[in-house]
Image (tube, rainbow, N blue to C red; front, side):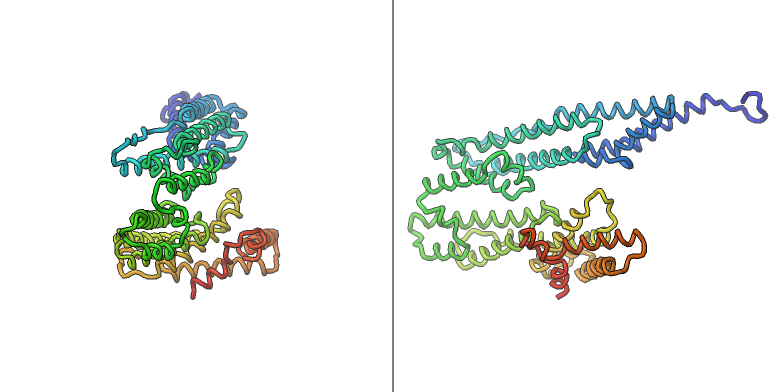
Length: 450
């Protein structure tokens, strides 16, 4: 009929082919590709999504096209989704493999640089490994490749366990006292890194880090002419006093000085790790305060000792990291406060509220640690006053939502959410749940304002 119609000719078949090609291009490049990128970055739960977002939504589209007798549209969508799923299945088969060769440590050689490199490689792999396991665990049971996710999780867990057990195996054997000192130094460095990592809770399920630490300390005690275990348990001031009271000619003097400097270096590394490798909303309450209290106490003692090899440049760089950390928190925190009520409900309001409370606690700590700075290049564009003002607005808004008389079902819902939020931010609730380290959001706001 179209060829008999007046006007320009119209090639229906060509137009349908063109539209089909355009549909395939949009589906592949603009719909599937972003989710594929999330998958490749290990953000499996986000990539899978739900009924309104992610690969789950694409699967629903394919089923809708089939039930609507979508013909070629259904064929194109099915093929594109299957190709991406097949690619993901292949990726999951090898996601557990260690993508590097560990540097070998040699007897009688200076292994300091190789030790650090090996520790970093293992740390980065385990951090990535456990992050992916946690993401896979959040994927829902009706996911198209849930079986493959389950198998990949088992492979990742086994690979992580094998790696950890293999590294710490020598210090857990009965003959661990016969180990080489450089091997103990390496395992102690690896243990210390794991002890402050984001995946510590996963590691302790695989290996007893406390026994590792005890055996290393026992080795030190047996192989050094100093009561290492007692000295290590001392406060910085007590260690400085012990060194002051020991003659430089005594056989325990140099080991004590080495221990003091090494512990100070570890304290600096721990503080820097919190500032540079830990999201500010994931830092435990008072963790920053504790880390910096130790660093500054040891720095003061080092000045009195005079012979300590602690570098002033390391302390200066740590202070710069603290100011940058504060600037970063001040830049991001107002937006996080403003968006606290705007997140999707499936994100978990309890997690949102607790993360914000932890963020404010962290910010309160860093303001005390880095109160001001002369170098303008380390300052952020957001001021403390803006953070405090945004927080006060959010607190007042929450209180108003709770105290207002509800007039609609939406108001009732807001009032309920406000009540739950106020309970989470109230210190008496935290104490009831055994979380005495948490402070009130209102107390934090008052502290910041003062």
